Image (cartoon, rainbow, N blue to C red; front, side, top):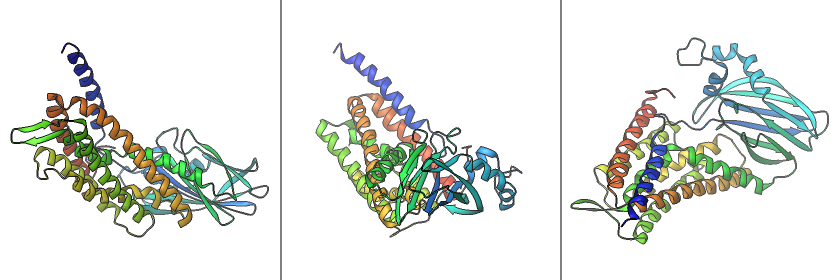
Amino acid sequence: MTRAIPYRIHMFYYAAALLFSLFAVPALAHKASDSYLSLTATGNEVRGQWDIALRDLDYAIGLDTDDDGAITWNELRTREAEIATYALARLRLSADAKACTPRLDAMLTDRHSDGAYAVLRFTAACPSGVDKLAVDYRLFFDLDPQHRGLTSITANGTTRTAVFSPGEAQQQFETGAAAPLRQLLDFGKEGVWHIWIGIDHLLFLVALLLPSMLVRTADGWRPVGSVSQAFWNVFRIVTSFTVAHSITLSLAALQIASLPSRWVETAIAASVLLAALNNLYPVVRGRLWLVAFAFGLVHGFGFASVLIDLGLPRDALVVSLLGFNLGVELGQLVVVAIYFAIAYALRETRFYRRVAMTGGSALIALIALVWMIERGFDLKLFPA
């Protein structure tokens, strides 16, 4: 007994730090900052289309001149030259080590799953044929290290993909090679990244997993009796969630099925809210894996926006989809493994039942309620 107390105290602070990191999140949960760059190499030139979120451009150079919370086409048009200069200065292309300087052809607007985007269409003339294309991507990295540049490169009838990040801002491509393994790895890392920053997806999973270490009795919650019981509780929930969101992620990314983004994001917030409330006022007792599966179908549509907005052809999309989905599962597995180790060690403590289970569920429900109101009514209750 003399050694149990220091161990419990140590685990108490370890768990408290973990819970604080999970719950100390902003009230808003937006889709991650991504831009979508499409490059097509033909002969001695590279044609490009670059879709950049207006909210990111506004943060970088200030587009909302009258501060009314809306960016109009007139405000955008008057800043066209500045937008083009800002963006194109952060994209360098070269063919066989010779610079290809991009020139703006037109600026349009478009809507993606997460809002309005400026669409820059440009042409880069190269001194010679494009056999090897080097891309140096630096957009927003100085302002937001979480920004990613999702890129497709088409040449000689073949399309390949790449993801640019602060750690991989410079990449070189053989224009005639598809390099499926590299595409798989690139989007695998992107899948891991998106589940780790997908706070709403993680909070849904945490809300479902919190009662997995406990058994509901007439006298309240009691700890599970064995590792195997806890393991199978977690396994059923995580497997159901994984299978469900993999189904709809694939259907949506392959454009077989789709739902309006606003409905999906609101439903995801509602799923987090209901899962947390069920811990406080149990309606579904046991069989939480069914809840995980039902709402996991909705979460899959949320994951799919990353690939849908890139607009890949079917052959490149399949490889990217596989890599992205495997990355999501790997990132999710890491979170679950950490949770399981800590939660099982603490399952018999008052801290787990009162602070983690009750207090954590209440806090998750509050955050999810704010998300649901904001997304459902297109409001901004708190600053981003």
